[in-house]
Image 1 (cartoon, rainbow over the protein chains, first blue to last red):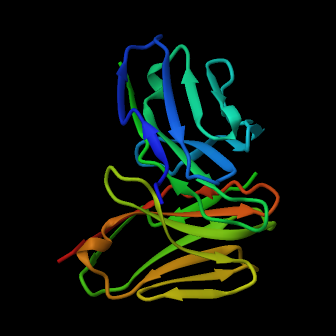
Image 2 (cartoon, rainbow over the protein chains, first blue to last red):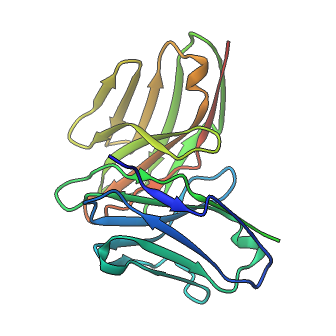
Length: 115
Length: 112
């Protein structure tokens, strides 16, 4: 099966500019996650979707970050405007949750550099 | 919320030695504990997981142990090989959230 696909792979922008990341999860996976991974750290949750509903977005900085998951499949994560501290790897993951735990399948991530 | 502590941050071993990485968690409701391996520039990939109804699980050279009373779990790698070199992350999640909280990672270096 195809894995989680993310694009772009790398993005370099100047501060105050907008940026968007795209994620295509594994077919049939109802749960989609966006994590942020700073250098030398573990992934930190930004938002989790069950189908098209955002069920946990308490860690998403809503003043500048937004996300959507249209039709419960693909998802986009947007930052506007970007700040220097947003430089990180943004990881998308998907899984099938609801009847016991299932492991997360991660994409390759988008490495964002804000200058 | 859940808090996961992971030690050591760096582990250097000789090929053939064993490696042990330890994690503690804070939420007694956590019942699922996956371990991920992340090679440089690549995605985290699941290598083994354990649920709270068992105390130990083994898969070839990799084993994980869980002590629910003490709220800690460990990853054991035997007969390490250079290709085991990577960053390893532990995580914990509860049935109510399905959101793994990750540790800070352990950089394992296996010297040939």
